[in-house]
Image 1 (tube, rainbow, N blue to C red):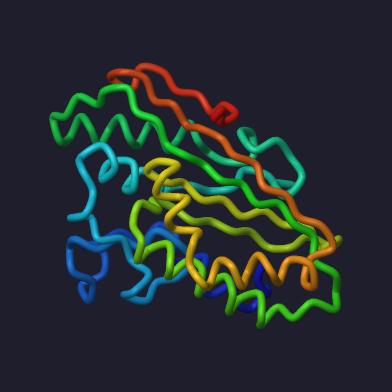
Image 2: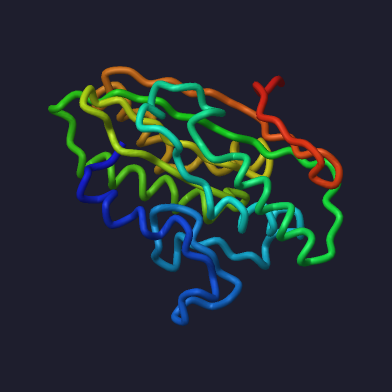
Length: 208
């Protein structure tokens, strides 16, 4: 979705967690490619299950180069994320009850004529709005392949947070820009279900 130059500087921030950066207060965690203070997650706003998931999601990585077109569940290291969630819960001596998280997948294709700078501006503004509204636990985006195809994904505390976080001016501007900046685009809504005690997990289609 963004320019190569922009993302090369952003990738290093994916797994930065509060406490690893002495300039960052311990209640703040980097949850996106944007590492400035206004884009960080304030952990004090989350309950324990969502704090643990936010920390686990700092490990989220793509597993294959064709993630833009490949099945979502096989494109990321979800097993590692859930394994980390289990270790974190154990360290906190916390028993996680059945929990659901709302996932949004945005697949797109951009033509060579689209302004990568404008895309980056729209993306950053939309993310800031989402963080201000609350409940966005993770935002990840990739790099357009040779055909301009890309994938971005968000993990939210719940669908209500996602609706609120996407209702601002920045998101509306980004949606209006899709007609002129993208050759095609589509949204998929999924649900990450973690069973009691983190004994099992699955990602399934979201149903209203």
